[in-house]
Length: 481
Image (cartoon, rainbow, N blue to C red; front, side):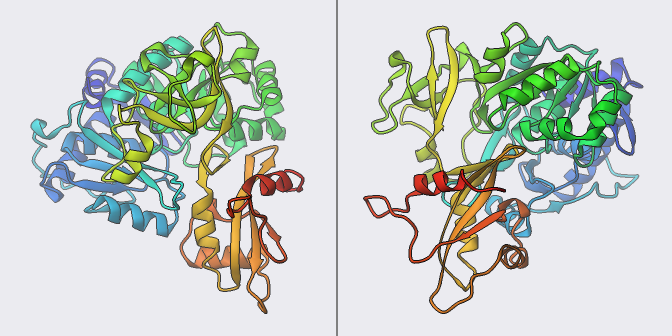
């Protein structure tokens, strides 16, 4: 099974049904199939060597999915780059993957291009896609995907939400990342269901589209559905068609998720996992509200989930934790691309993938996240490396030392707060000056600080001499965004 074959099947069986409903019009299954075929021929002509990497940075919408499918048929590995990525990140990903091209829109297609050789198309087990995830060392890590993991994820998703071909999907996640891949590129297509896509998220546009297209399954990170609840437009639209909201990527705020359920009648479901691991646990329609909204759900047996001692790495699953959650199963990625050091840190010697989160698992097999071992700020569902923020902020000529931590926020979950020590005799940069400096360096806005604290003397230190991040987090929790 490959996505290419699924699209070909739907083009044959339901050619005029909509595959995607976009902001600029619909794309039928026949159009999806034929557009991808024509583009695949063009891509194969311009990149004759199978396995060539091509970077794709396109706005969300039907076109980006046509590009992904065409690359699959042409035997080209897509380097998926988020539409909001800054120039520095784009340059790094293109260089690190050896991408032969950077595509930001569908290229013109020659009318006389010969059809692509079907033998070039990837199988489900071959490397098909590369995307990035925040690294704790300051640079993104590049995750390798094959289609088989997302077909396996699809089967799990169908079971948790009782999904069918009659559902109307709407995913408001960026297409290149794991959550966006399964909710927009894979599951609706495998089912033969229609998917509603927007070029960019706004609460009002999403609420309007749910009513207009009678959306039944919505996929959004917690920040997005909280913004929908906060929008005055929520009272202006009929949302009764919604039956499932898939969320995740960050802690689900219980009270707001319960409010979303009460206002719409939908059930809020989530998976616990990551771009690399896939899912370790899941909630489903039969779970009670506390399980669905306060935990990561029931451990997925086929994923062989363990809890590891954070210091020794020993298996402490029998204790129930807390321990570092690790897993091994069909939903896992293929590892990090050409990065032995990252793979050695990520994988245990016997091949289990570490999540970086401290979790507990109770007697009923329900997993709950108890804490975090990695130095990330999770803003709006996006993992932001504190080390990466610190590396960029420290490039300002007036800054001697800095440390980035999470500052709690009611909408985004966490925001980026930076503590700064200024060089002797220099003037401390304010927030706008610091952002201007980062913008001039081509740094994406998601890495820009949102609050700056000037520290006199030195940053607080732990007993070993390292910056006392715990003390800074405690202080940041008292600040007003």
